[in-house]
Image 1 (spheres, rainbow, N blue to C red):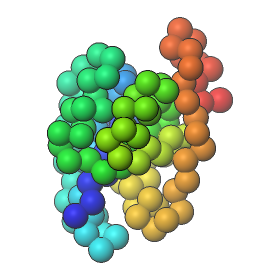
Image 2: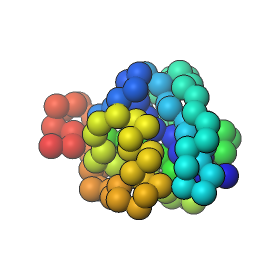
Image 3: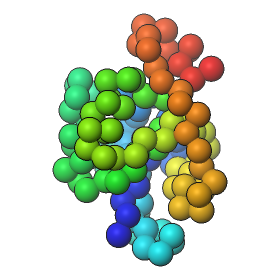
Image 4: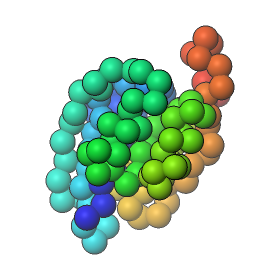
Amino acid sequence: MLRIAVASENDMVTEHFGHCLNFNIFEADNNQIVNSQSIPNPGHRPGFLPNFLNDLGVNVIISGGMGAGAIDIFNEKDIEVIVGVRGEARTAAQQYLEGVLKSTGSVCHEHMHHDECGH
């Protein structure tokens, strides 16, 4: 069973991982989504969310943009990071399962200028 977390604003992929409204968690078996749930973002604190998602058994995280610190923690935990994604969360998860979703490496280096993230 593969667990994919999509940093979201309701059903859409969010630009900013740490400030997302919720995480859509999709469970997949044989490359088919068999279960999904939405979990509210428990709050943005440095280093907290990657550990929170790891505790949920997440294997893959999908987001629009993400800070380098969070990416490092995910990498340490062998959780695949896909960033630079837009659109509907379920579609993104399905595209990942089909092998067509690729990370563009949109890393947020400057948290002061939100509008520059991912452009």
